[in-house]
Length: 155
Image (tube, rainbow, N blue to C red; front, top):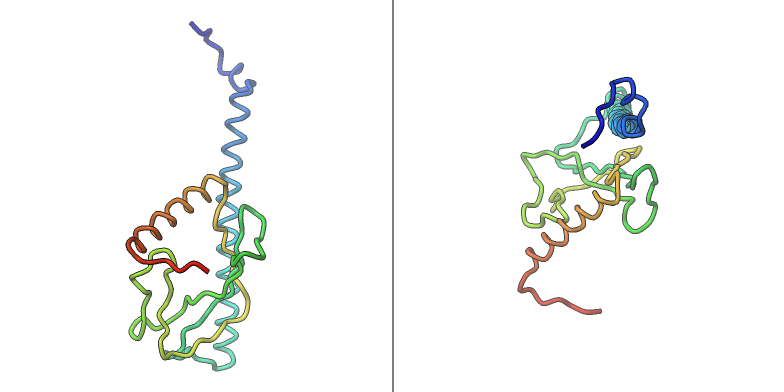
């Protein structure tokens, strides 16, 4: 049977200090996400305001792309397809997201012009190796179910 300890003793224990450290790491991650999100909003609000100041209006027949920097934890991944220009601003009356490919979803832009907006967004894809493995497992399962029965081409 374990010995009861006082609250004062617990506060001084390694378990309590580790729990506080874990809580602090979690709060830091949340604050970093909020900060990154507000940075993105601020950048694009400035870009939209500049466009408004220059009398630039968004065209219904253009799909606008945003530059995206991929991050693993706090490290920017500059290779392997993690730096992308993604379609994110479009007229939903004219086009939409594809609904057939759950792994590589994208805005359909058949016949529409595309324009890249200035600046870039930072996309923090994974905060830990376990998040990466879980997502890789999910995507590989989706890819397999989407391609079951199809012949593959070997290069």
